[in-house]
Image (cartoon, rainbow, N blue to C red; front, side):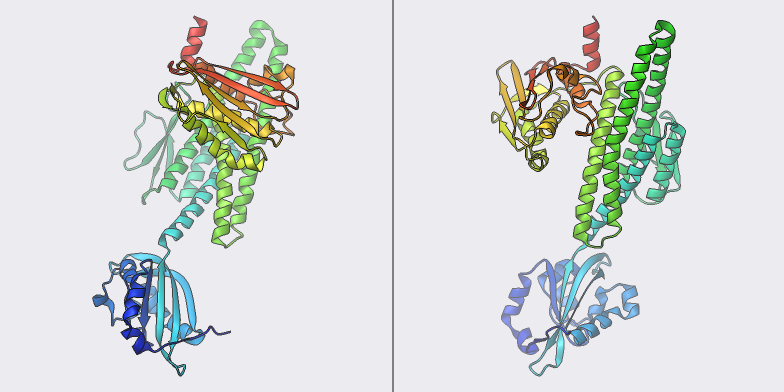
Length: 505
């Protein structure tokens, strides 16, 4: 079915004093008239901004000059005019050329103009610059492709105990994903190849870097590429740390058996390790599986909006995976001697609001809306990143175990101390589990009902005590739990290593 054809008096339209006023008021679109052969008759401000030509330079010229050399050679410009003349309207997206020779991605609509008798007298052409949108979609698509490769590498590293195989797979992943040929891993004290881009494979807290990941490329690496390299280096670092920790664990187990003869304790340690590995594998597999499904669905859909929606879901799963790995690394740092604290002055009320805002959507989905009781501002000196971690752990637990009821977060203070309270009205904690929940890998609920590694409260208590504070909980089964964090307001936070040394002294 043909589109409706617009009837106009072209001479009257060109002579109309209101034409320029109307078209020049539109700056985001190039709007101009063509004669039947494609010669440009008018030119608006939007056209000058998008294409770079002043009206005196372009009026009277053929509209062909906006097309690429390949399009002109194939006769594409006049083919579009012929289609618009036949159907009344044609629309397409494609590359167009500015005055300075640069290209931009455009959405173009060409509509036929008729006189009163129905004869063709010209066309109106409307062009919109979609370069930023196209680049954003391409950037999101590239991020999704890299995240898929990174997820596969992470899953392989989780399942593969041999460090050499993980390193080999990491190098191959970088080569295939970024289309590079020269990718190498070398010691931190070795010089990187000339012109190479290098990222450190960071060691655990207090240790030297494990090495460097260096790549040589004939093209500039994008921000996405560099983030991808850093993520790959983190996977390698985690595999190295795991190998070293497993070796330390094996040595400790043998020492316990040979020197002390505590075979039962050694077996229990092995059982807990195996149970933790099983829980960790389950928790890490969940976001990886969801991520793989979302990324696979991207290949089967064409809608840009649906792709953006799938990519958003994929990114959320990778963020969840990152948080799980960060918790494992925190436990490793604590086991190695402590986590350094970096106190600074900031507004604690503002931090609580920020974390609460991040949980608004998941809280509403869980039917556990957040209620805040905070002073307008509460200045003090703490490690901002670590206190944010404490708030995230307590609020996420309250939402998870809150049984679909409101969660209250309150903040009180005097000149010397502050008190943070997070209270839910959910499933509560049995009396025999109250102390145990602050232990490493300890859980008060079965994993089949609630996910989690059993590390959040262990890390939370460590951070609070490193700030010379205390954490307590008051809970009753089926009535809810109230966690209270009491902190000095201005006393500097020392490192976990310092605190351990003070305790031993």
